[in-house]
Amino acid sequence: MPDINIDSTYGVIIIQNLKAIYVDENYAKLYGYDSPDDLLNSIDSFLDLIAPEFHELAKQNYLDIIAGKITPRGHTFHNIDRYGKEFTVFSIDHLIEYAGELALQVTVIDLSIVVEANKQIREKDLMFKRLIMNSGQGIMVHRNFKPLMLNQAWANEMRASSLQQAMETESILQFIPVEKHAEVKEHYVKTINGEVTSKSNIVENICFDGSKRFFNIYDNLIEWEGEPAVQVVLEDVTDKVEYERALAYRASHDQLTDLYNRSSIYDWLGTHYNTSTDITCMLIDIDDFKKVNDTYGHQMGDQVIKTLAGIIKKIVQKFNGVVGRWGGEEFIAFIPNISNPKTAEMAESIRVAFNRVKYQQDTVSFNASVSIGISSTCEDEADLSIDDLIKSADKYLYFAKANGKDCVVKCGNAVSSV
Image 1 (cartoon, rainbow, N blue to C red):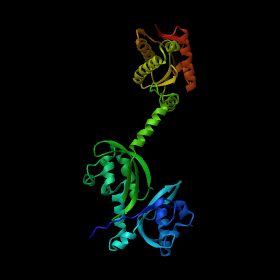
Image 2: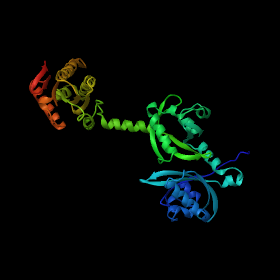
Image 3: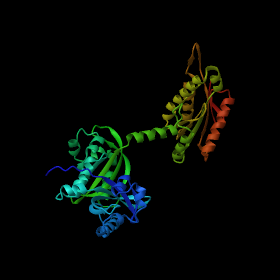
Image 4: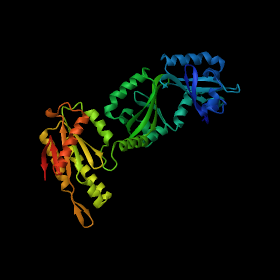
């Protein structure tokens, strides 16, 4: 069979309640319109774009797909451009959700060149396969997770060494984390049975080279060589996911100390406070910090703050607690399910470790100290709200300052001091 040079244009239309509610630029131009708005404003129904003898078939196909009576598949129609000229198109149907309602997304491919070149070729199969093979997006068709066809873009996205290596894959489950296998198998069965509508999801896959990448996956039920199969469109969104994660991290963490900020501390409490039988709050404040800044400068002051942040985080995390910068030179920590002796031990460890650090500026060295106030939802302070718990810790921190600083106070008593 001679090769055929296919240089067709394809466009996309979305139909809802028998009306065209969206077309892309290619679709509009395919039908002789200057823009999508020009097309949409010129027709009352998508049937206006189809030759009259196909109206009933197209209408019934739409209703049956929306009702779930048939599997979306390809069709060949004679369409009409704005000048009344008929041309042959191959349309590929996709059932989607649009603005909260079911809709039909149709990819329309101009088959005029194919029809003229060789009428003996099955236009539907040829164009669909060419569309897959030449697409810049990664596209694969599989049945029971065994690839039936995939394009070079899919092989490239998945870091395969060649298209052949990708096609020889026994099961694409090998690219999916094991803990997701049951969920993916269940979704496949529902897709094949027409129980779910197509939608996109961002997933983490394991590529051929062992790297882990994030992909936006769109899968839908199609008919492939007379039997149901699943078409998967894949787009690498790793950079986007990592950027969004970085933004979220920066939004939830203090820039100087890399600790949680105040709002993130409250988020943590929303998850842990009600499920813990007991929770302890520590407020930790650097003594005479203004003097440090005034004497040694703000850069040195920042170093002192970062040093304390690292000490608190290292010690508190051993007890499954969380630490945040509460403001300025003040830090807050919450530790669930910890005994009073352990609380005292932890606070004293922070105080001593920080006090031992020597800071050097030119020929001058100095130490800094902290005062710590502790409150807890133990029996003698039961039923405290979060705000009450923090206020109580703040009260004991005040007592620590009044007691000469560089000490730990809980329930009004100094646990330790120099």
